[in-house]
Image 1 (cartoon, one colour):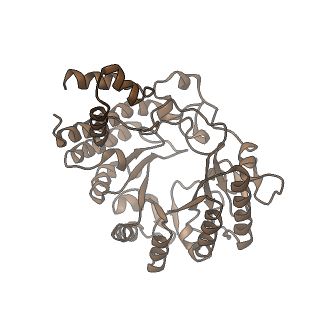
Image 2: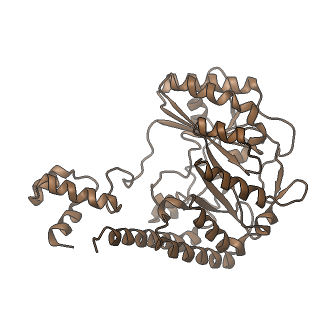
Image 3: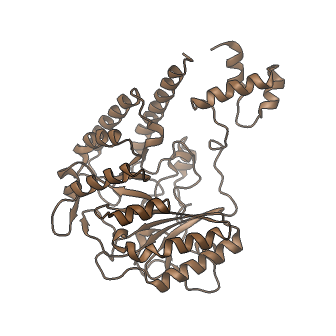
Length: 409
């Protein structure tokens, strides 16, 4: 790197604009612009504010809801947290229409321009036909108000038809797919209700989504039953070239020594894949860590989102689905819009350890899931301190390869 190039990089502080840098360093604006655009292509610099110190906005500009579409599910996963699982009932047409009325009311009153629905359950694709008419209706109604509605199915993906695929392509629906390993490793914790395995069907349907160009990401709940299979799963997901997330099981003890061992092996596999051109930064996420976009809290709950149960109850989190002991509002209440309900509901997000406020990773970790914190901390705090530097190292190796590919080294 030349001295002028070094001076330019040194002047970039996230606040000074290019005009001032140009004047200060006596560099022609067009040359400075060309140099920064070249660096932008390698992700060395970025023209946005994603790495500014995260601050909680005064009001939400978007909303994000987990929709508990049904208690029905064709799997019996070992770690499932839903207390009402396998009881009768899906969201009725009346409740959906009331939800749409509340959405329209809230968008009109608050000027919301973006809403995300994660249709979950139970297994939401068992309810596909009942949502098939609602989704286009809701999208059109909100579009008329200048608000975009995005939909994702949070699914075990054991159900997929040509009709579902065609509808998803037409309405730009994405998929969050649960997969815990290959073959019997997955099937150890994610069995069909009849006792059979689910992997082969999920594998087949993932391939179908990929072949049709439908956006999907894979979520793996890392637990004692699938730890040893994590490296093989990593190879599989890297080869598929789809985004994937490894989340450590909540509410259960996990073998810490094995967890670190097999995670380390998995990141070594990812490191090798980076050298072949695999995009690590955009393809892998670890738990709720915000390594690429620092955060002021872990999720939308308590500020711009929550979970809506089949009867219209609005809870802080989907973990509370069907739990009558948890404080909640209902979308059938006339005097509150959805933002009012979120603001006047439960608030776990700010209950954090004093240690967390002093931690250098506080905007990366955000103290983990508010529901499962122990004394204000994520139970995996020490593990994060081991793997956050490792993940940043892999991101650095990825950028180093880009610099070499662009002939800058």
